[in-house]
Image (cartoon, rainbow, N blue to C red; front, side):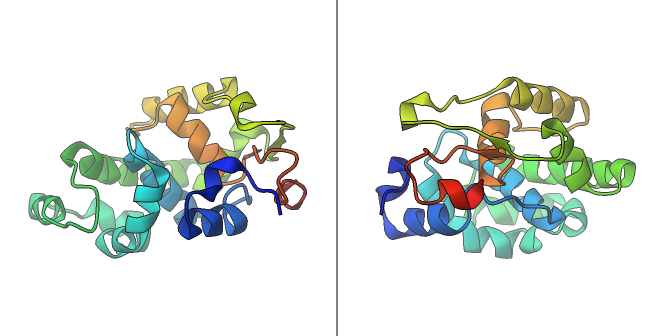
Amino acid sequence: MKRCEWANSDQLMRNYHDEEWGVPVHDDRRLFEYLILEGTQAGLSWSTILKKREEYRIAFYNFDAAKILRYVPGNIYNLMSNPGIIRNRMKIKAAVTNAEAFLEVQRQFGSFDAYIWHFVGGNPIINAWKKLADIPVFTQESEAMSRDMKKRGFSFVGSTICYAFMQAVGMVNDHIVECFRYKTCK
């Protein structure tokens, strides 16, 4: 069974690739989770984030933006001492900042899903990459998303992070064409 080569490092990565990556997501809470995790991943491996994912769900109230928004400085201090997550003050504060921007987007657009999917016209972009090296790290859509999100107050949403987010939540199908998941996610 052929899969995208980045997913072959360990069982956790294979499971993520085989069950989640590239599957269209339309649930606001799950979209927010991916947004926070992709921003946290900046400069780190995705495998590191996946290993800490369950602890993130606990520490960030299962990615309930309204609860995260009520964080006080003491909560951030406690998170900084939590070995189960990435203890980077800027990334932790970004989760709080992004919770506020996320809730505002929900108010303006009715849902985060409606807002975020408009960058691809509501439907996944289906690519046909033959090898991993062909896949870009950002696109004009991820650049537009990044610019707009930054204007709305989000942080840790550069165009590369936005593109990784788009890949994760199925806004683009970047499985290589020989991958067994390519047709499923198409």
